[in-house]
Image 1 (tube, helix red, strand yellow):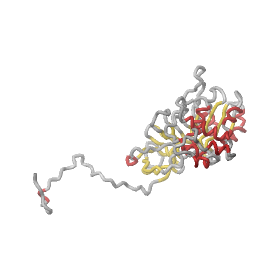
Image 2 (image 1 turned 90 degrees about the horizontal axis):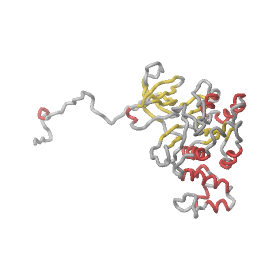
Image 3 (image 1 turned 135 degrees about the vertical axis):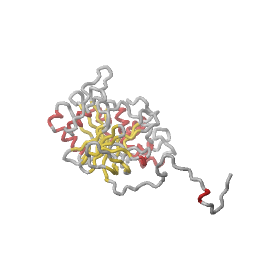
Image 4 (image 1 turned 120 degrees about the vertical axis):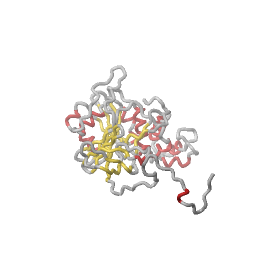
Length: 336
């Protein structure tokens, strides 16, 4: 083996040629200081539709982002051709820090966490009062996911001409969740639509719901130019509708500065990713009472300090019941 001294003759050193003929790799990445800010409106097979100023631009994720993926609602930095013309493609080089994240897993045993929407202010949980029947445990799961992700939940109860909303409203009354009740007949007169508009005004709202509950019909009424395909019918045997919305899409709410994000219909909402200790944050009247709880308390055990906190008159017993009901959804596996 030949050894070289401190000052070898250059002619004695063999340099292995770069067979690919490209430049050597470097860890120094461009800063893209001239990048333009935009908002992701939808994602389809690796192509992202981004709103840049008042233009719709098609983009793809830059390689330097690695495994980090952009989702609907993300604020991103884009470079390249931003004209929005046909057959042009820009690159997303940065994804801004998210203010909120709506996440779900396929079920409670699935460790794979999927980010559905980013930076939404509210989660509108759309539930039919009949045809199909309401699924309170699915509502509970959506409420937990909203609290965990930093979104405010809203209840939108549809088809009140078929059944009363009293039972559902009583179940969630202690959570102080804003709600609106709509019917198929009266929704066309504009009064109920105006009440929904009032809840969404100036905010980014993600819509989620079981197939067949009228979620896409509601979105089409709020944003008429969207014209997303509706379900058409509910299966008489299973009581479930077909998934007609296949990808999340952000739509501007005219005249309010708000946004509506329509998401695909769900049949289950896994909560594997949720830390149960975060759910208590949605109960500010109960949270101080956890100071005396044993370490690692599940808030549903014999030594939980919340029982004494409620018995001392610091909070309504119904609120503790609601907290424990929501925490229990984390342990269920059927998604109903």
